[in-house]
Image (cartoon, rainbow, N blue to C red):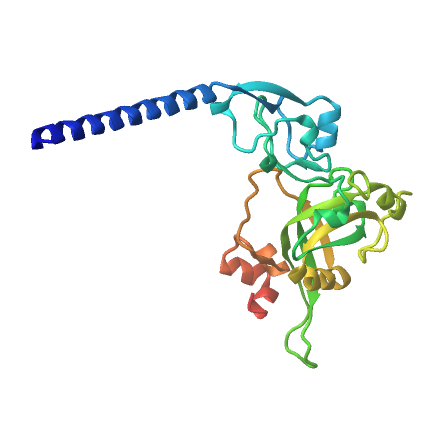
Length: 277
């Protein structure tokens, strides 16, 4: 075989291989394009769903439906069957109408056992207070609260130059309410435990409107001391977009002296000057 003939043969073989690769590539592209046009069943929300909605109630009320969409439009992880939804969960945030439903949209629901609603270092603790202190009738399972504590502080030394001092501050933020006597998995038991006869309740957690909170383990000691020796109030946080300001400590002098000049404080609140406040 001459040199020229050999080169021609090699060129023909390479051309055949290239043609085969082009045909194979074209076939794969066509197959992928075809697959992307295939219809797939997914679960979607019929209408807008609010945060904290129990999945069981949503299923019972027909809040979900299945819909056919092309493969390329399927959201990763989207459910393909309503029966595959976990009825013990609740929506973690608002769900817009028509959204494909995925596992990331859900969190532990208020109908799940208390032990299933906490994990890691979170601990569940039950308390009961005057209904006004715990927003009784307003607060619901799944809400988040900030906790305010008020103490009367005095020096541990005898004959101290410092007298007693009242002080208040935000003790904890973003504490989850696991159940109240109105709703949540423990509602029935809490209703039985709570003072439902219109009494004022007590600040030591023994009487009044009961609820169960999720407290981080490293804050339990602070919470227990504040519960036993101070006065606690619970304030509701926004459902979405909650923000926290800088922590401050309020005293009678800081409250009454806010916005006053030094001359005014000396005139009206000389005790605060004496205390160095």
